[in-house]
Length: 250
Ligand SMILES: C[S@@+](CC[C@H](N)C(=O)[O-])C[C@H]1O[C@@H](n2cnc3c(N)ncnc32)[C@H](O)[C@@H]1O
Image 1 (cartoon, protein in one colour):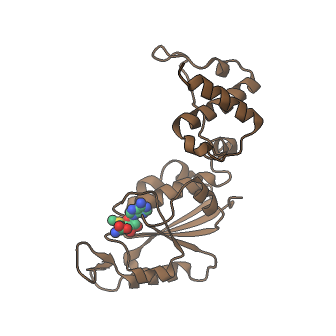
Image 2 (cartoon, protein in one colour):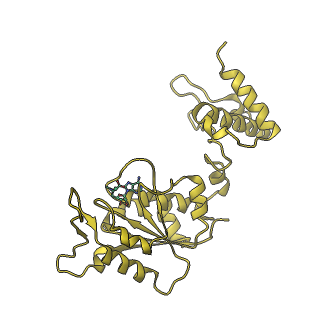
């Protein structure tokens, strides 16, 4: 079960980066409802020179700078001081991929500490103070900040009570292993295109059946890999067979 409340600390060189994303929509609501205790920490606070240097040239030479270990390790110790069970993760392209399963796993943690790298990354020796890495995907961002925004946004909507109707979260893509069904709203006719008749029928069991089938259609057409090895109910199997016939030309 996801935790009812979660604390997320973010260690960053650029706390201002988060001003926009964390002051609107779901994350703002989660914080206001006190479901999410979100704290930003400026890494430069733990630097010691007048210029507040957090990076240095790499041993061995080459391009780019490396984040120094001392401020990082001091910052992590200070943020975790007196608290047990804080899971510390470095946002990194080298980590395990952040996906729905990982999000559910992390939603069970009472306290997360996300470390945003920059430049060429952090001095390897600071990894001794970090529990693991977390990647957004096989591409390289300039810094861990956009990745931290994605992680926080995803976890915020999993917190009970943050999204008004829990059922809407549980019907989202990936929750039951499938993609969500298509959605429609007014107007009833848009650029000559109508709304599927089942959705206008007012018949709840028909609407539910349409949604289940279209969820399978979406998955089969867009992400067939998700269906591999997924246990389906007899009803889902029947819908999937129908979809396959309907979508196969001839
Ligand atoms: C320019 S990247 C460093 C990349 C590093 N030299 C490498 O090739 O593995 C700077 C920082 O951005 C963050 N970052 C980059 N790509 C990321 C990704 N796919 N997922 C999560 N964080 C990422 C990490 O915190 C990383 O330390």
